[in-house]
Image (cartoon, rainbow over all chains, first blue to last red; front, side, top):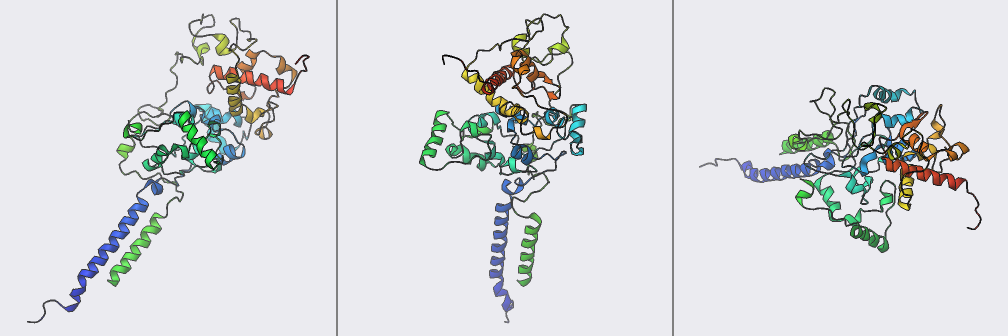
Length: 217
Length: 210
């Protein structure tokens, strides 16, 4: 009896195995690389209704974060300023600039400027700004060097692992309270500095929750 | 197999060229796989809300009501002859005595903590225009058109009442807008105290016996 299958059929199993391995590798690598906030969120830089530059205001002019985000140290929510805050200066500075027309209209009509929110935690996460900034966690740890951004962009991943990284090792991120709003503060190194940071964690009774209910209430 | 490999390489290259790399800037909002869990129907500060006609979650103060504790709009709501003992202390909250004259001395007990608080708030809210030393030469001052930030080191401002300074911080003066929506009365008094300290620092008086 002649062979039912031709000779080349012998190589089919090995070809199928190679194909499966290649496809699985591509899928695993692809999901690992793309299905994470490090890809989906980082780099989000929406176009705002007014081309406000943090690099100019917070960086070059060194206006304190709290001049506009006034209630960040008293509230869970870091407020976006109303147009009256803009007009505190812009009724005198560049008061006829066409770029600022939406601000003037908003100030006169009382209709808010539709700023596009960049940083969002999911609604099942309860994040409180005041408790972080009042215990030596700087804006820069989560928001990056906003004082160097012309257009604000999402710099950190805001994944749960990102939060836990700091909640597990607060002494590696904590800083003196008076340097919280100084985004270009350089972290000193060496044993003395490490002991100081551990001292902050101890003295301020910093005990970041690592249990689920700490943030998912 | 060759055809498979060709398709495989093509798909990988196509996927990478469409999806790009981590961290590239984009104006498109982040992808959320289960947005009903990420974005729940609840009130969030400064968020949008379809329920109200103006689409705002944060509601404006209803007409004829008084916001508790901050003394923003008592004057608009109550008639001028209303005895407002129950609402608050005009000395602390407005820097004015009952007869409308400015309070001479700040009504809080002076302490190191208070002046330190004043320094902090001054540097945030006043320094940009009036300068760290209060000389009216802040970082924003060169860009101003048609306005000159006050220099605290002149005879007029050295001799005014504390209540007057409190009133200017609260309600503004000429081009300056008031700051009472951002600073509590105690914080405004702390700034007054710090401004007095700045004035002394620039105008030292030699006293015998010190």
